[in-house]
Image 1 (tube, rainbow, N blue to C red):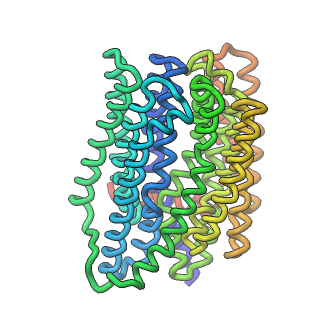
Image 2: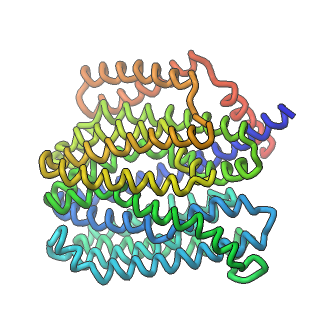
Image 3: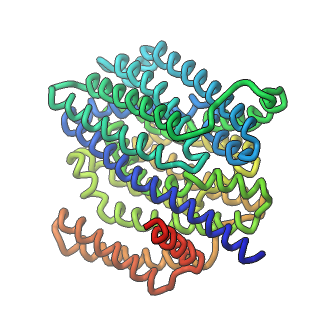
Amino acid sequence: MADAGGESRVRSLVSIARGASLYTVGKVVSDAGEFVLHLLVSRFLGAGLYGLFAYGKTLAFTALLLTNLGSDTSILKYLPQYEDQPKKRRFLLGLAWLTSFLGALVVSVTLFVFAPTIAALTLDETGFVAVLRLFAGILFLDTLANLLYATFRAVELIEYEVLTGRILKPGLRVVGVGGALLAGASVYGVVVAMVVASAVTLIVAIAFFFNRLEIRPTLRGPHATRGTVTEYYNFSLPLTAKEAGTVMQGRIDVLIVGVFLSSTAVGIYNVSVLVSSLLYIPLLAFNQLFPPIAARLYANDERADLAAIYGATTRWIFTISLLLGLIVVVFRTEILMVFGSEFTAGTLVLTLFVVSQLFNCATGPSDSLLMMTDHQYTVMANEWVFGIANVVLNIVLIQQYGFVGAAVASAGVLAVRNLTKVAEVWYFERLHPYSRSFFKPLFAGVIAAVGMLVVSALLPPLPAVVLGAVVGIVLYAGVLFLFGIESVDRQAYEKIVGARKSAE
């Protein structure tokens, strides 16, 4: 039985690692596209107009947290949980799609109608209303696409999300926006190109769904009962309220900067936040298939496997993120200089957000684990408590310290929130992800940081970044190797290699 349990555990980790590797490829392409997109807009239009673009995009991204009304997470929970009840899966999927469609419609229309009011209260500058209305269209299209992506993930076919959302859409955006800027377009033309990219991506995702998946949503059948509907909304509505709290944490700092400061300040601040989000990639990557696998293990009462997977996944996330964070902090000025000399004013902001993202990654998929173990109301309470704290601290500190105050508020709240979630997982489920193996990346990080600082002191900026990053990676990997590979990591690696050899 122990061997069977160990085999199941490794198989689940391999599935998570497979999803993470596919997602990482897509995320690297996606983030490269985002980087080029923001670089093009900032270089061609300057910090002021870039600030308008970034502010409108942030508003749409923030609203996107609300439009699906918890449907994406509900799909990740219920499709794996009821894999042996296909009719119930179909009904729950249909309910999720209907709920998300209506939510997207209401929020998008609201943003479109109230665009003049929003502009008057924030960045009351020429052309911003038209830009906001275009972003309302993007919001509707991207909500529907995200629902399809959640369906792909729930059945562990993440490759279709990667192909459409992580490769196709950013590629279309860069080509469209680049062409618009070369043709002399301003910020309005840039956002039109993004609308087209979102529409094409949605069409391709729909085609993948109908051609590659067998499951079809329905609102009829034996499970179309009040009990099933109550079960669904008992999970999704707290998540909707949770997302409302997340809005107050996610990018509310950028929005408040726009209220109290200038579009130039928004541009500088947003670039720093954008660069720090690179550290979020490992957490997002390993969290793609962790929720459905955690939901299945919890439903089957396989707690030992769930604990082992929680610990290994968190350690993997932290190990990768720590190296990325060290590189960004050591070469922060050189990285921001790429966007333009005026953006180097955000070096302290960047450092603060890197530290907070490291706290975020060090706590692993704790948020997803709370949701998949039926503690959605706790997650909702977390988001509201820390969301309100974030809004209040941002308003107070921005007025005293400018956008550095915004960074102190948001970074501090993010760090404390994630530590709280780890404590809650332990309190409710008696699970925690930590072991002595976490000391290995910490020690390796110290050695790598020293090596990069030496290179930075001896070489000019550009060569220092290139050679310093290489030196940091080599030192980091070398120290980890000298400490020894964890047995579960070795087993997962051997299984992946064995599967590839069998495929060949």
